[in-house]
Image (cartoon, rainbow, N blue to C red):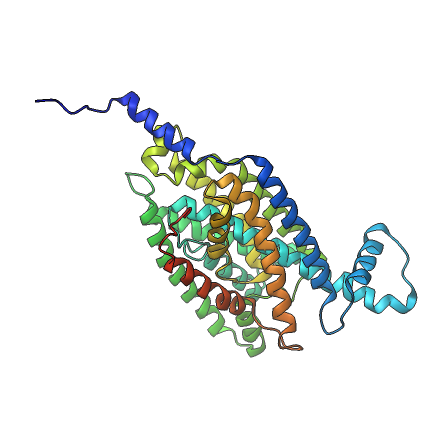
Length: 371
């Protein structure tokens, strides 16, 4: 009779290390850099085309000329002043804001799905976006934080997102730690509750015009984009992208489970706390200027993983560019498809995202984080 071998502590540690190595990039950076450069070129081309299209169509070469004149301080003929104003003052901030929000939503979606180890997670599921919406709507309706000027709504959205994250964390935390399942279930319940609060705020607004504005804003729009709104969003999204890239290995390990993460020296609870703060910052900044835009943070990470693999260093390098290109074209459709009226962005992203996501779910070979 032979005794079956009993795994030692050393072999368990080696097994965990092997799992960690398995989630590292299997292909060289040489394949990732050309892909990112190609996406960057596509993004720049999409921005120029989107700026030129609208009720007044401007050719790409003319659009590029106006943009170069604005950046370099060049001269524009007086007869072109109106067209120049359309390009630089109206369309350019809007298209750039669309790119920033698309990049931010895709990046945050990647982080949340890894943090809670759930393929259906995004800022809406955890209640972060709903909290940001409540904060932004509350500031818009009551006029609170008026001393902050154009940044009042952004501040309200950030505070709302941070408060929602704190409530979700406090409700989901237990002596055993912060379970991903408890976190996502608590987030769903909190999101529904915050949506009810937002509906009540909108219902109690005495001004019907204000009600229509807020309702439309909660479905997503870049119509209020100005140069003044861009800096806060740009800084928040940049901080989010850089911070998550620095945490890419931790996200890889957390996706394997809390026990594996702990065996490799990663404290999952501590990282989740930091991620919740970072997610609140980025989500609050985006919701404040664009409203609620669904499915981008849910679908884009899955599509990117199918192409580049599950390693977060690669996914976080590609997702912002893919999300930015996608949102630029979504916004173009929103403002031109039924012009002069404008479609809510959330309607378009849902119409695209639902069938794409259902198709992903029906792919038997597809699983969260890879094929």
